[in-house]
Length: 514
Image 1 (cartoon, rainbow, N blue to C red):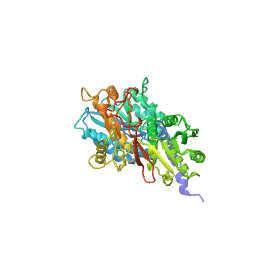
Image 2: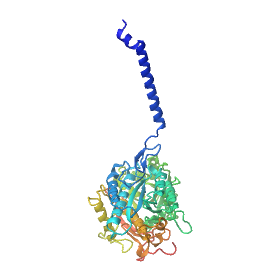
Image 3: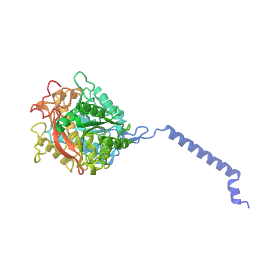
């Protein structure tokens, strides 16, 4: 039967008018809301100076105010940097930026980045609190280039705008991977007269040299891939007739390209053609290279080779080691020699450590190691090229920032060498800034990058990783190369090797040939 209430509410003339008005109002509100959503830009800011690029959830930009770029592990050290920066007097400090892929999704890269930030902060704290009140004081900022350094343009543009007041940017450190985006970033920064100090870049073509200066103002504290290869050759006394090269065939990666060239030069007399694999576009991806390495391991069993030189990134290195450990000829011993990417594997949970030792030895040219300058039974420290005292100064600063005095900066782990090398790179930047300060409280921008030819002899940097004596082009001369072996427990320091076969002279002056 008809509902009288329904009839009276919905079908009276008055209610029809009211209902229509409500519907029209709702439609109008919805239209205004939709238009507002379409026309008002989405707020993509993360913090002052940091935002999410379109199409990305990463926070990209520059910050020295304690922002952790939404990476919780960076929180403690970012806050420690903020506290140190807050103590500085405006106009009396120079800023150094640490340019790194802070938000990389790769666990190994995040570990590397954390350790580098901790080491750089330890040097900032030392420069401001343990240097007899030398000036200028140092402000540290973090600059994020994002996954694979894909967003390098954003922080680089911000850094170029920070050379004047109030920031007075005078140097950029970090620069941790030998990749095409990093090369572009270094080109842009040095082209703007900003001094750059690379931490773990080792590619030979990311350098200046006689007759070429693509990166004016660039210095490095790590040896080149060629120097690493020469140091490994002097250390291992490898018989080329029993050695083979396994390398990445993907072009465009400056680290693998130059390491391949350096190893190829050492193996000119090898009777075996190189074994090739092709890594994914993003070499941190697993891809299908593990299948290729299973085949290569089988082929190695048919050769007389007992030494394998490996030129590739750490993900592929781990896959290769795992495959070689499962080879059919486990009765035959093999030694794998590679570059500093091996340092990533110390904390890689996917590495099958059970295959290490016995018949499979894996050694890499590290950039630094905490045991390199510690004397041990049967292993005295070299007489030159570095010192126990310099390393102990570094350790004392890491202890300081690891506790309430300056930090805490979170758990400190030194075995991968990243904190050590970042500390030394920051020390080199501070050294140049203060050497260039001759008039007024701050040096001119361009003068900082002009200091590198004088960072030698008695003006060298006494680094925790070894002496940093630069040639006229900003490259380290005969830098100590710790040879480190992967073990089932943790990486084990074996011995210091030298690109020139022996430590530098006491003067540490690069010879004329350089």
